Length: 414
Image 1 (cartoon, rainbow, N blue to C red):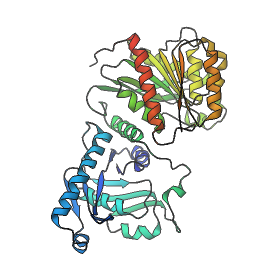
Image 2: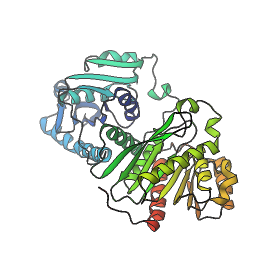
Image 3: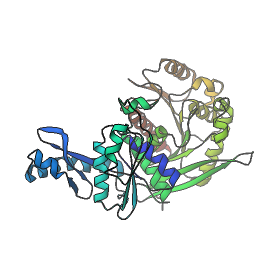
Image 4: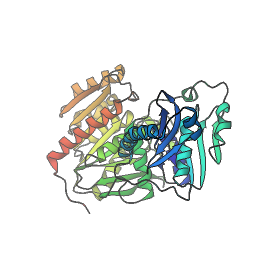
């Protein structure tokens, strides 16, 4: 599976997980005619791949020197994208393989066409183009560039891809990195972005005989582990939590992403607000981390109702928690335990989330531990606005690093 970043990556990640297929990005830069940039004379891909549409080049009177100049400029941007999304991880090889090119939707088809041509130039034996929505007017032209085209909806009239989504918010670089890291971790027990990270599947048994699943990721020279408590309607694969976790891992902070509820329980609305139940499970996950990483301090990152569970669990006498970050949290649901929280706590709230901001300010006033409130201006409850989730991740990384650093300088890991 190769996805067109950024929007194609969340779609491709779900398909790759279902097909147990490796996931990568396909990085393409169109080469625009100098005096008409929207008209593509060709496209470039990684590995010095260059695809030129000779008919367009001749018709637009673009010389080979012009093509080389445009290519040099666009390759700088392409290389920068590669470093951002992959770090030190090598590309997934495409030669001799069936390659599925995925986007979140296709309008005119120009970028998708360029991606298919680049994939084929990289040696793919068969190219499948897949997207949830493609207008019927575009669908026919795409059949000539891919061996197969797959789409869920092919509507007419078609105005924009976003009209076919309930939520078409911008995908951030951190979300893309987190999804790629997660896919790489599933494919290999070693580090997803280079040597020195351990990945351990975690199972937390329940009295019903079922188990909650998760994955513990610990980088080399780790200074602590952050256990994530997701909010209602979410899970361990939440793109937002994965984006934050990816940032923490790059700050020498281990992470545990796990499900607080079974799939059946998640469908029961009452369970998602059973804070005592959620906190008990969070405590069980904490004990699991202590058994696996006894030398590292532990913190909680909670979102929405998950933040209430984190505060409730941390309010237990003797709770072994070194720091807490609550993103858009509901501390009012843990009001009975706030006085018992001893761990330094950072509340992060969107400036355009007035109700939650009010409850967080009230919690701040009622607690006796070290605590701060960070307001991310322009953000609403889910931090969907461009740059706001990255701000949350940065605040969380700084908070945990500062407070874990007091307890442990880190230790070498093999």
